[in-house]
Image (cartoon, rainbow, N blue to C red; front, side, top):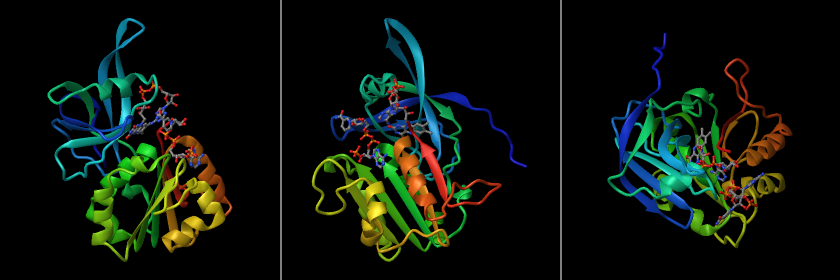
Length: 256
Ligand SMILES: Cc1cc2nc3c(=O)[nH]c(=O)nc-3n(C[C@H](O)[C@H](O)[C@H](O)COP(=O)(O)OP(=O)(O)OC[C@H]3O[C@@H](n4cnc5c(N)ncnc54)[C@H](O)[C@@H]3O)c2cc1C
Ligand SMILES: NC(=O)c1ccc[n+]([C@@H]2O[C@H](COP(=O)([O-])OP(=O)(O)OC[C@H]3O[C@@H](n4cnc5c(N)ncnc54)[C@H](OP(=O)(O)O)[C@@H]3O)[C@@H](O)[C@H]2O)c1
């Protein structure tokens, strides 16, 4: 029987808030973090002034750090006029915020059936949970081939490249990374949406692997339009959402 742990708010201190581009940042915080599973998310909370009134605003963010790493890290983008993301972007080292504990969510390996090939498809900051999962030993033990696909508008948003190259160097036969850059040239990868690349065959050609219902599971994380469009394309291959009571081939985490 699994014990039910109530969610509570914990104080956290900002270690660093690194700005990669005008709208993409990584926040590292120190807190008394409870154990979690790679792929889960926390809620961050801050007082924010909205229409002259101070409100506590709370939003969910995936953990990028692996369960064995003590420092909490999240990867986020500033949403135009977004209440919490703009407030988070103003934080500097030494500032405080609140974090929910324990982390929660079902976008975790435990919820994925064991098959030969695991596809991890992200738009934007939807890359985050995959980085945590790829830092664990379990993913490399359970799947024969792993393909990480990251779609961003511009090349400068292809972040965490060193970490991703490290996964590739350590697992050259097992891991492929495919970058889809949709609003400028991308000589090193694809220049279309992941959906267009799946429909044309370009995605599987570049990855050197087919997506088939018999041996593949697809994780999708990010914008709901990508999730919907990918699910429709995968349905044409007989692939359905995976549920505990009805095994399938697709697991999703919708950010917005
Ligand atoms: C389970 C889960 C995990 C999440 N993990 C992350 C994460 O790791 N990193 C991250 O950046 N975001 C993540 N999000 C989104 C995050 O919770 C917030 O919605 C986002 O930061 C916007 O909050 P805000 O208060 O600034 O915007 P709001 O004031 O709430 O404005 C919301 C508006 O912005 C749109 N919007 C929301 N999120 C985004 C986005 N990321 N990009 C563009 N438009 C958006 C919404 O559709 C809405 O129209 C996650 C969401 C969920 C549900
Ligand atoms: N500087 C800025 O403020 C700035 C910069 C970029 C984007 N934006 C805007 O901010 C919003 C969010 O952009 P974002 O980049 O953070 O997140 P996003 O909309 O999720 O885009 C991230 C990636 O996902 C792709 N994508 C979006 N919808 C898709 C779908 N249905 N199927 C497959 N791929 C899809 C995008 O391609 P496409 O590029 O083809 O959409 C892009 O490569 C958008 O409205 C965008 O126009 C603002």
